[in-house]
Length: 449
Image 1 (cartoon, rainbow, N blue to C red):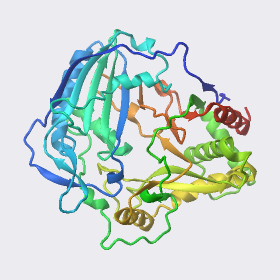
Image 2 (cartoon, one colour):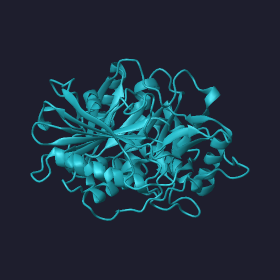
Image 3 (cartoon, rainbow, N blue to C red):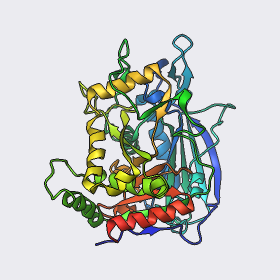
Image 4 (cartoon, one colour):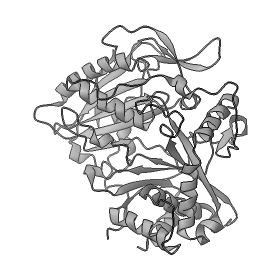
């Protein structure tokens, strides 16, 4: 069995990738598109922060970085035609007072840069190195001061001929699944092929009902005026340590077996790898923070559920907006420590099962009436099965894909292993030092390591 080992920061950790910006420009749709305002759903409208991802590629004899930049730029110009919102800007409609996207063809940002290092010199790609932020462009005022493009792409070449594509998009534009489709279309356009997926840009499909009907309690949501000083989107200012816990396929199978064994092996609950891993993380996170001092404290874990197939009628698989809602599970710290593991898995499963058509519509309607955010102790954000690393570009598949990791102790990230290392998963955790020591011990204790 592989060990559920962690690894700390590689030594020495590069804090400066010595990136030089060589060119910044705006790119525009390759064909004229009609200007219009695009409705955004109540899910989209709270996700006004940027999602920044980095996609690493090894050297390719036929595609040196300058040629990749040229192909990618042309592909993005074509993509701005079919993703008509991506070259637009967020604005508040004067009449409705709602956030919307002005499909104004004002363009996206494109940046060409270079690093003084080779790709194999910058460290483990799956370690959340804050220096990777240099691979995604931050300054968005390309042509006008205070301009805020919804998409900025940076190509950074390394001395070995490898390169990184850093993409920043407003979360209002895509969720993980639709961003994967966007990448597939970029890859197809760069290869002069037809679109891999025809995007569905109709956000009205997730409009609130009229009048809105909130038919369930939603403890997983917190009204804006009830928010404490920090909320689900704010970074922490306290000292945090990062660790990457690597679960092999054998480790995951062991967690699933533990769940079955804890109820005698007779259960109708479907024990998936995600459900078992999420229950394991939940138990470790809650007990590392409050389990000893406050066993009666209620812990709430949040995790995303894709609602495309759960709605009636189902959304098109090519829907480009955010079609993901936050499921939740709750238990006290005492219950998390004393219950059979299967019961925790069942709680996680119940949270996802709860997300029916009516429940999803109720949350959307809740957002029509209230301003608020998901509310929980920890959010498990899974990039494990999104498949960004499976996208085939003319220059090959990425060596690794990852978002920039924020300074957050309440978000735990799941990633596929670097270089497609089987069916395992990397669990990225950031906690204050004392809590991390407890988490580390519990993580391995409950795995029997």
